[in-house]
Image (cartoon, rainbow, N blue to C red; front, side, top):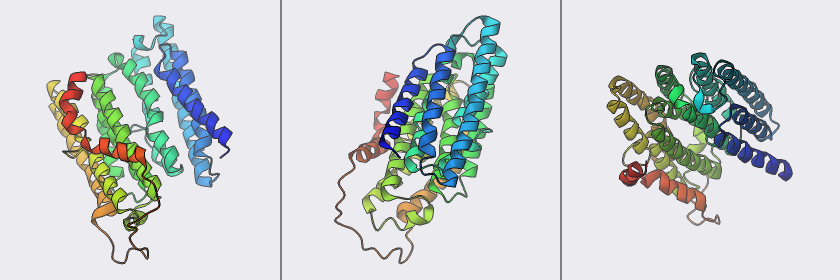
Length: 346
């Protein structure tokens, strides 16, 4: 891809995200979302492969639909109440339309159909952007309007996302699709607590971003796109594979790793809100996700096929240490003891 085009796309992504997360007016927020959509499409389609072009078209169509719904929702609210402020979303129909529009933008169930296909057609770096940075503006809009939204609708979306994200990821063999369904399941955890404790949604999103970034950067470094490739990557980069296993288990939410913290705090808050059945259901559904994380962990480190590769173990490599990956891996595995400090800061 042309360096100038890449620079323009990257700058537009930062600009669009900044406009949306810092705006109070619906039109400004919508403008930021549109800039984001137009900036990411060249990055998705840059390989010119038919699958990449298909992914770009699917992404454009779904995001355009969601943006039109957001605009329609805000105009309906302004027509009824005279308010363009994001925090003053008081019209019930507008609230429902906004929830549906953001669900499409984020890829929540039942509007998740586009997300795994778009990730599968993108490179690992673009898939990382789609799974983390592109989720930030819609989640910010939901947080700003969280006091006006219907908690029952959000809970239904969250439970169905945790179910589909775990269930559909079970039989996948492509790492990008597995991480797409992992993203859908994690979004369910973020959405379920949003109306009761928005700070927990922010914490869950930050930690999810850290862990997912670590996994994507590690997979990009060892060039793994499917599970069969992961099986033979151990002989080339044993240490990196071991850290990938730790990060995957952290994403699964196993103690004593970082990923356990948001799930623990969300279950605690749901119990305080007398939503014990919801907490029980979403915890049981996370076991589905745990299965495919363990499967990935087994493929990366624990189960090795006989005669896996003709390569000898590279005990001495010429590669320099990838500092960002090392820092993110440390954060992905060791933040749980800092839980009391993080809770105090919230």
